[in-house]
Amino acid sequence: MTHDPYSAHSARYETMEFRRSGRSGLRLPAVSLGLWHNFGDGHALETQREIVRAAFDMGITHLDLANNYGPPPGSAEENFGRLLASDLRPYRDELVISTKAGYYMWPGPYGEWGSRKYLLSSLDQSLSRMGLEYVDIFYHHRPDEDTPIEESMMALDQAVRSGKALYAGISNYGPDATREAIAILRDLGTPLLIHQFKYSMYERTPDQGLLDALDEGGVGSIVFSPLAQGMLTDRYLRGVPEGSRITHSQFLREEQITETYLERTRALNEIAVGRGQSLAQLAIQWVLRRGRVTSALVGASSAAQLRANVEALAFPALTDEEIDAIEEYAVHGTHNG
Ligand SMILES: NC(=O)c1ccc[n+]([C@@H]2O[C@H](COP(=O)([O-])OP(=O)(O)OC[C@H]3O[C@@H](n4cnc5c(N)ncnc54)[C@H](OP(=O)(O)O)[C@@H]3O)[C@@H](O)[C@H]2O)c1
Image 1 (tube, rainbow, N blue to C red):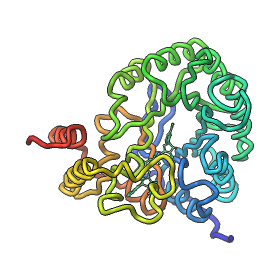
Image 2 (cartoon, protein in one colour):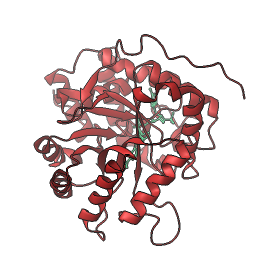
Image 3 (cartoon, helix red, strand yellow):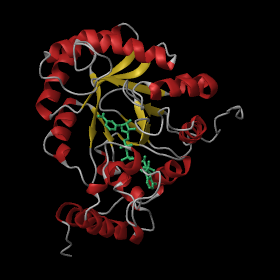
């Protein structure tokens, strides 16, 4: 299919906020785009192109991938490689592209988890799928209790030393393993740039020690599913729309739309409406509140969703009273005030 040649919007850096990732030299946009869903082979490449163009035009310089994103696994990297070749290649030095390895990719003992064998082979495969010489951030996607953490961290260090990645990241590690990873990578001379973890008004585990470990170590934080995959938007308040993630993803189920969920989410939606914004925008502002998180890593099935979400950054910061009210609704489901 033919498409117009792409020329990036000249005002792309005028409104986006950039935040330093921990104590590194790298600044990331406050909103980053993830290609977990909506970039596999089942989604039209033209829609993918619109989303990626919209992202870069708004100053979203950071695009997040993983070896297994699709479906089928690998296809998101291949499709992104096509978009890079046709649209973004002239802007490579303005982009921070990340990928990861940790989940199942190929049969046999070397196709998942955290061995040096798997991580470095997978990085080579990712580079070839995307047509890149290097990625900016290479992550270990999940902790592996059967592989010494030193081995996984040495593989990240090797990825950086070989020039195939510029920075090292970890994802889904708990606070203790994170502290270990920080210390090992510091000793190796490749300081941990960033940790990627799930965090939202509905997912508070990182408040129990992980964010503290990152602050202490001077490590950045990028949070995935800040919209709880769409459950922290108004998407499911009036039923399950055709084409929504619930209808096509194994990671989000209709059973999750319970009465308790609806009650809490309607209450949060009212707070958002009271501020003149959407619930999605409130959810993004919430994870970015008080500057503790470097970037909110969102997904989008359309350019319009992404544009609306980035507009969150233009609203006044949440007040302490609003944060307290959100606490009552999101965690306890009632509001005493
Ligand atoms: N490290 C890890 O283990 C890990 C795990 C998960 C994700 N991630 C990363 O995090 C990224 C984001 O995760 P996510 O996609 O779950 O994030 P999310 O932002 O919580 O959810 C995105 C989904 O929410 C819906 N949505 C977005 N904006 C909306 C709006 N304005 N109004 C209504 N609905 C809206 C869309 O669903 P519809 O499709 O229904 O329109 C969209 O696909 C991933 O792409 C990936 O890069 C990493």
